[in-house]
Length: 68
Image: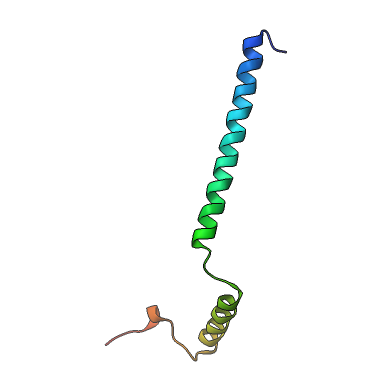
């Protein structure tokens, strides 16, 4: 399968490099998720109620307001 020790070493280095890259990407995604994840359970309930009010016609979305 492998011709020489150099092929084995190159394969091992490639596996370590890909593993580190995957680890670094996952760590960065977690950091960004913690930074930008500002909506908690109470906010989700409030947004749901606002969407229900828009669907019922009680509220009008800002982008649908026409100024004459």
